[in-house]
Image (tube, rainbow, N blue to C red):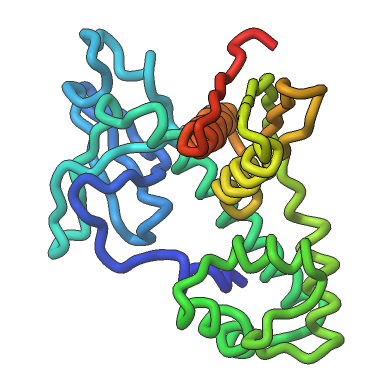
Length: 266
């Protein structure tokens, strides 16, 4: 039973949207694609939209059954068809879309297993978990992360204790994210008499940049050197997070008359 289809998919794709598709058939001048994000929709990627380089053989880039990320160029809602591009998908867009798909699959597996183990129906899942999440503009994956951290249900989640306990067990079992960890030294100085307090404030504010599921720690290695360590889902996000935290920390300490520097080789 696919309890996800009715709430993770939108009805009509939009131009410029990045989607995941499965290559169904390859022809001389392009490839036909089935859109995972939009069941019942098909796409076509012309050979000119495969790569920035000259393409001699489409199968050097795509093969039947391959799951790939594409960008929508045009849509035809009447025929439920879209024109796609592979070459216009940025690396960051591809990574983010793949991460999003993996998260949806994990949520889907949790809900399917919960139904199998408890006998809860599709309608009960919608009313107790899916609809309350949608009404608050939240993502189920983020809600599940909160459940892992707190092991207590949100007040608005309409579940009996026994059912919630099953949900917690399944979420812990299925959502085991691999984190990318990066660290660098951060030099922070403030020569004012209460400089240590201002450094502490700068660190506290910069730690707030971390998003759900991300971790930031700043520990002293002996003034004025501090160790900045971050954890995120991808290396790109970890690098971005490390830079953002360092910039925020340095910016704040400079406001207080201090100085800061991220040591590139630590």
